[in-house]
Length: 319
Image 1: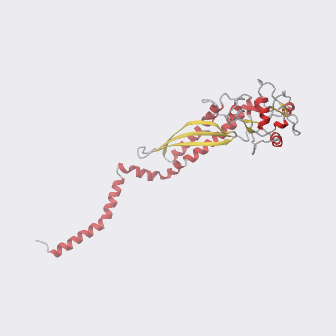
Image 2 (image 1 turned 90 degrees about the vertical axis):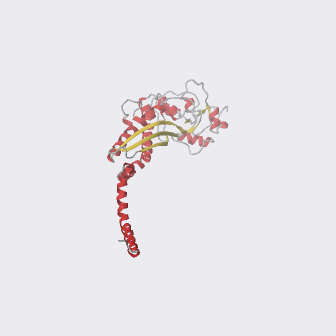
């Protein structure tokens, strides 16, 4: 029996109404079906692992802190070893790199007690434990650890960290890979000068402290000497050379003035020589010191280049 136009019209609107009501249910079914397919597993895993996102995001900041504390401990440990044992480091940059990575002066040796827990291999072990608590496997690898003078009073430590993270339960669901490049600048101020300790058998101590302004005349030179300060000089050894007991010049070299009265007070021999430390401690040089007319330090001898550097040529005999 053929439907009249009126019934055909009513049936059309009835069908349309059913579809409108059913579409949300169909869409919801399709949504859950779509999420259950392997193609959407990454989305599901990302939602499930959202709690671990903070751990991943914080790794860069934590790496900077770990590098900084490791570098600070490496500097102090290096100076402490030279001063306490009375022998220089064979290779100061390599020793400090090893300390930063493994906590020991030489790879494979026991961790130096002065490093405490502050070295990167232990930090990486701790990071693996933390990530495991979030249900994540993590691969960490530190490379390109370097140390070099940045300025006369600072050292630059740099290192790369490669990170790979994936879930323990479903390694194929997602992964995260990143390489971080970190740089830390640290001051040597407050550390003991290892060169002075080496050259005085450890009985005279001099701590790194730097002038806020250049030494430019007799009054500033006298204050510089009284305060036992250091000044930049590319003809003098830098911090790393001093750890190795070397007097050789360096771009970021530093120097101080040796007070012979400190040496004689400790029954150490003194010599007639310019009192700029890298000149005074150099036994191969002939006497280059001439008297500086200083009321505060009447014992002071300087060579003419240093007299010019410190602005006291007029007060230095023969210069």
